[in-house]
Length: 88
Image 1 (cartoon, one colour):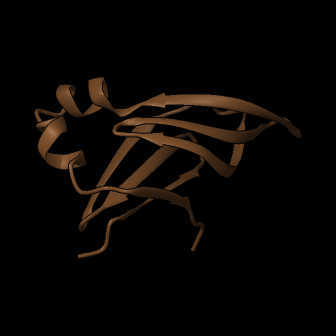
Image 2 (cartoon, rainbow, N blue to C red):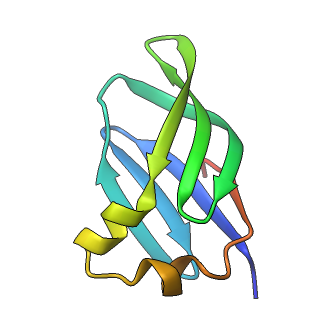
Image 3 (tube, rainbow, N blue to C red):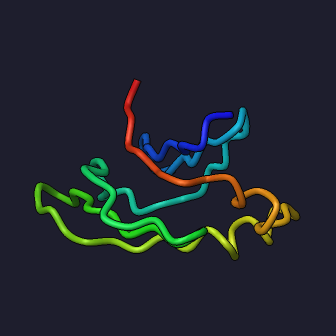
């Protein structure tokens, strides 16, 4: 089993993909792209992101997003060991 999730964005949405499931949530229209993951802590992601040409640290908490989608965060996140950024 692959233990790597993928973070990306397009237009005004961020996507978090793992195990054939893709979770999309609205983000700032000023977000250009994510550049690197600094930390993954079981649902909490610290990433570097570019907004209007300026790179800054950003924090994403997936727990409330998953709960709002009626997805059990503990079950969904339990096997994820790493998050990478990928734009296909």
